[in-house]
Length: 357
Ligand SMILES: O=C(O)CCC(=O)C(=O)O
Ligand SMILES: [Fe+2]
Image (cartoon, rainbow, N blue to C red):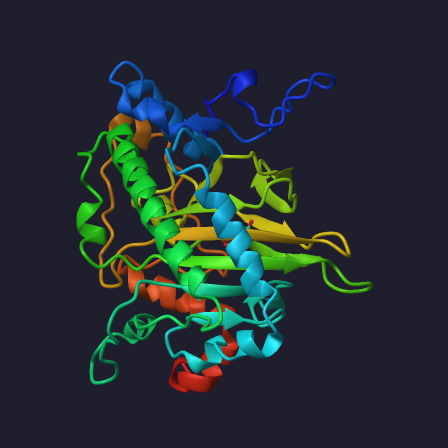
């Protein structure tokens, strides 16, 4: 494996500290506003490419999101999680064949182990697709969301957030494309009019005595890229880098960005889908976060890029996914596999035929 060539300057580190100096493994910080200025765009693209070759993760500032929107999203999320259990369970994901709605604490698995988090999963609001009869199994992923009747504000703010995330993701993908010697619109077809993005509004309750510390277990994200909002001041996210776990604390106003397995696959491993996890917060505390997974059309065949020679020699080949399965080019199958593994209760309730494969 070629050594990473990207050496961010100390100023670009998130947790530089006056007494200890910058820690070498801290994640880079990138400023998206530099992509809009012809004087700095090229440097931005190079930094983006090298950050995601080496780390697969970075902090993004200068993204232009309304400054009050992240706070509104987190406080509305907290209102949702504070609803009576019965109101949340009224929209439990077992009521949705499309893997939408509320997952109770302990209702989700990563690598076969229980994650200590509760969440609501939201996807694009579209008509149900036909299944069976030669239609692809992944069609079950499309359909309506389940929203809490008691809190209409959740739907409004998540919809606003998704639109903001989609636009940031589009800008990043264009910059990545160019940084990899491609046309800026090389990924556009794969998203088309029907991207299958997913937003999770998540709360990690504090650990309980003798209980698990797995907020969410080590995993790669299976989509194209993830834009993560973490409540200010809340630790817990760890990112694997050169065999070690880096603590990725949130920086106020920054998104945490990482690439998913489809971008690793598209670049023959030049870009890295990096393993990460969240540790359950200390007892008596909790942590809210909102990962937005920017994903293509379910039926998209994601492009495999022909990289310029100087980048191609640095490509590492595609790792198998976290469960040691091969990644498929027809995106929906990867998405379905991941959802089936994470939410066996939904499969049990609606898709038993998927268990026997
Ligand atoms: O909640 C977080 O900070 C990250 C969650 C995550 O990695 C995921 O849901 O894929
Ligand atoms: Fe993740």
